[in-house]
Amino acid sequence: MRKFPFIRIELCTGCEICVDICPAEVFEMSEIGKAIVENPDRCIGCFLCEENCPTDAIVIKLIE
Image (cartoon, rainbow, N blue to C red; front, side, top):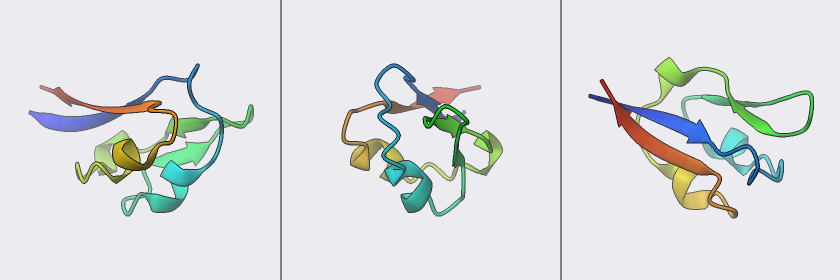
């Protein structure tokens, strides 16, 4: 099992906190000004993105 970040795009406000806080550079901003999971394999499961997202748009899920 590994951790994978998901973004609920309808909740993302484009604040860029996840992009700035992620030590593994998993996120990038899309052309529409919302965060996207650009490098999911880099996720180290630190939960900083999920804990600091002001709109709870990010969820870390366990996948096989």
